[in-house]
Image (cartoon, rainbow, N blue to C red; front, side):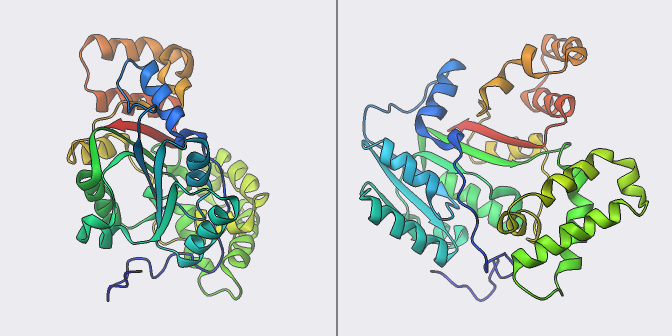
Length: 310
């Protein structure tokens, strides 16, 4: 574990575990099928390949991918020692041997490229919008250093404009819960209950955003550990797809498709009233960044999982 003097993770939620969730979009077969459906090449799953999970948490997705793909070699890295210990114990108990887990910070990994293999797949779910800009830059540097030509990056993040309505509320919640006693889960539960109270007090933001009130009610029913990681980290950034595309193009990765196949079917996923304007942009030769931004606005997109070939 690398501990630089200026630790970028010092304020992250450490005291409660991130709940283990399975994300099918991170699976090699899912990513390859999505790219094939778009007419694009993908790594050959019948031959040996290497897969890296950036910010793997307790390792559930990496474990399932390894257990169902014995021809691949899998690696998960995360900055939290307790999560890595849990991941290693689970893999050992289940006898899955084509994977390993390392407690490693993104920035430290860029300084020791040999610590990570050259990869056919890199996946990153539930991390990119919740880390500081220098850490996002370090993650992109790892992609430049370790993703093989023809490899695939899967990157999920909170997107504009759909998630932006929560930004001010998240900042309010983060600041208000810092001095509260108890664990991060205790703070998250108390904080969301407080937000529910505020929605009934006539605050202007909630009056202007009725869907935000519904979202707060939905959050109140979720696992407190999840809420702590989702809402109490100091870094919480709703990102524009055009900016993410530009940042990845700088490391020689170019947007291919959404990892949610339905979102690649414009006639199905876009509201009907927006199709004519979208098709006009296509005829005019609009850039991919403009087209994807239009889609996000048309759908009020809250989150994106992108498949990006190198």
